[in-house]
Image 1 (cartoon, rainbow, N blue to C red):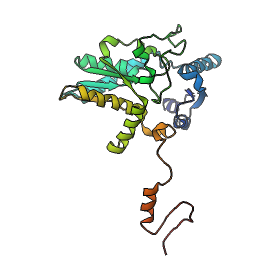
Image 2: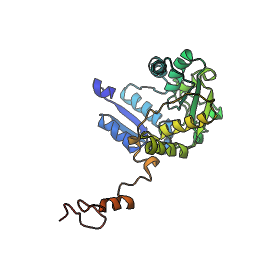
Image 3: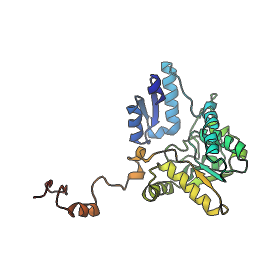
Image 4: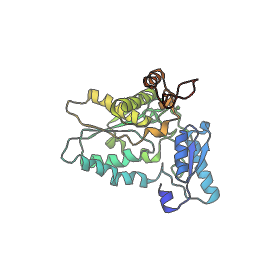
Length: 278
């Protein structure tokens, strides 16, 4: 969006497993999307971006390494939360991590303003990179040198690439993270569906993962606790993913029965369309 507004050419490198909707949205905004092979994982798309920039003289954003990432959240996201809860109680903040910028930057601002706040950081149980305690091998610029040995594929798109981002690694973890919470992929999908069906909130799989961590945190939190879960994603980006795998495009039996309950404008399987009833 920024590149479109400012007239910059934009090239996005995106690994094959990311949803088709993401590619199409980027292209709608004028970007060129370079899809990299699934086997290359997140490090593969990073290597491709580096290669393209070195070859063509382009600017590389380094969103996984630049301190501008987390500092922006320290100046904006964190203070926004503090302001929203001014004069109110907030005991827990639950978030996941992609680059780690929100956790690092907003976390610093929140802990500075609310020292007793408990921060719960979630990551996929299938890709417990932080849980493993194994550091990411890095190149001189801080980018990952290789895929992390604890990584396994997971359905929570936007969370936990196959390396620990430098932005996250450089966060003062002992000060910021009170709890590291593993999220089963199926629970993230299930919770996202429940949010849509019961609360009218159409969030993505990562939003479902965050809410699952918040709900589980609530089970053991002291009575009267106030838990903030951030859901910075929308479900429309997931139409081609497991989140919508059992959502049919055609009418089911119940819907067909409703359609047939009045005589006009029926579109029934293997029958001629009915317009205005005689």
